[in-house]
Length: 103
Image (cartoon, rainbow, N blue to C red; front, side, top):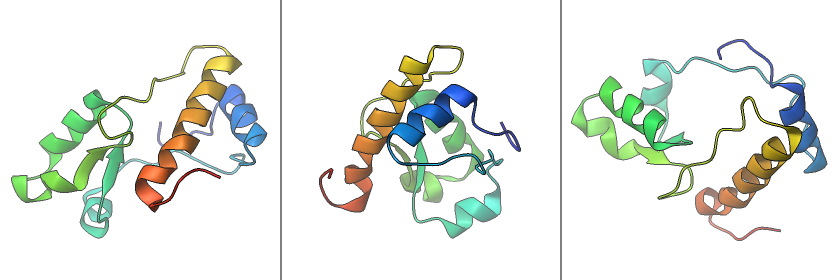
């Protein structure tokens, strides 16, 4: 949610991977951000569908799923293991966008 901090279980999971999200805050996507971005990544099909309704067809190719063809499971409302599993999956997915393998 816009302006909210990461929930504590998420922050602990990310710190285990070496990321500190204590100053991270959610931010509402704006049309200016969409115009600026080369690619806008969505964590699941529902968000991807919502993004595609925001803009005309010419922007549709810039909207993509983070994991290519799979959803990142939402850990909200689950235990810290679910947050950690999600963090590991997100970390592994970075190779799809940075052009190199993990590690």
